[in-house]
Amino acid sequence: MTTHTKSTIRPATLWPAFLAIGLFMSGCATSDPLTSPNGRPGFSVNCSGGGGGRWSDCYEEASRLCPQGYIVIDRVGDTDTMVSEIDGDWDLQTIVNRELMIECR
Image 1 (cartoon, rainbow, N blue to C red):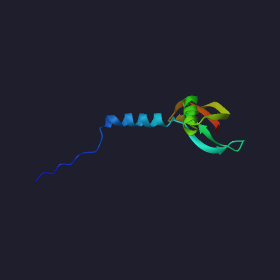
Image 2: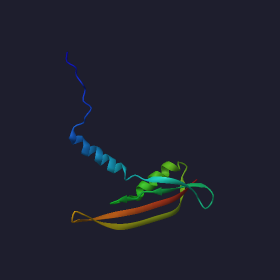
Image 3: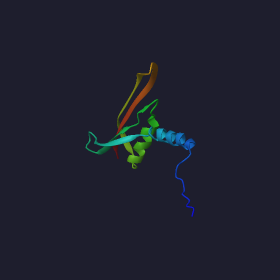
Image 4: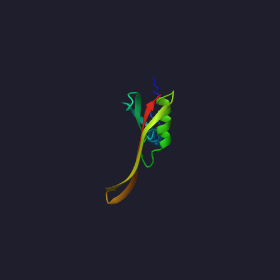
């Protein structure tokens, strides 16, 4: 009697695509709740990322968090360069730090 098993292993050619999707999604904005200086609810939205976090990611997240609208309390942006050495090879990487503080309406 022969038994057949269905393989669930994906071809190796698909793994790079899954990795690329994961890296793309890691560039999305994150947020933490805060209380604004006026005592209203708000958020600190972080859209930083190696190689180029985008302000548009922060604004999209702010719109999602505050569907009735929001007021920008502060906007902080900075770019740094990180140098690393692995096995004698030097690598320069741009680190973008962007944070948007908002107050929901």
